Image (cartoon, rainbow, N blue to C red):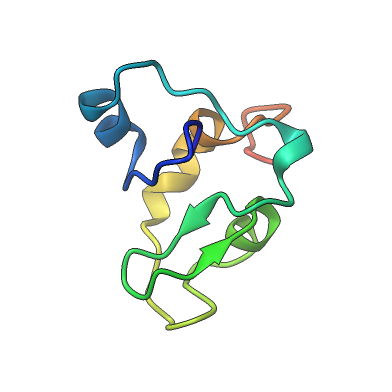
Length: 82
């Protein structure tokens, strides 16, 4: 979420936004950065990255999204961990 709008994935952002996506900077990891597509619960980066399903409704997250963590969040290396 680089532009205060919610997108299901980086490809959806690229297709519909009028700008290139910018990864969430580390100094904003404590702000809501991910939203469950089922119940709408928002999560900070640490909350989202610490679970495989929504803490609110239990819906599973797409495990493939972890491979794209660098597109969503400012991270230090290819492991996806900061």
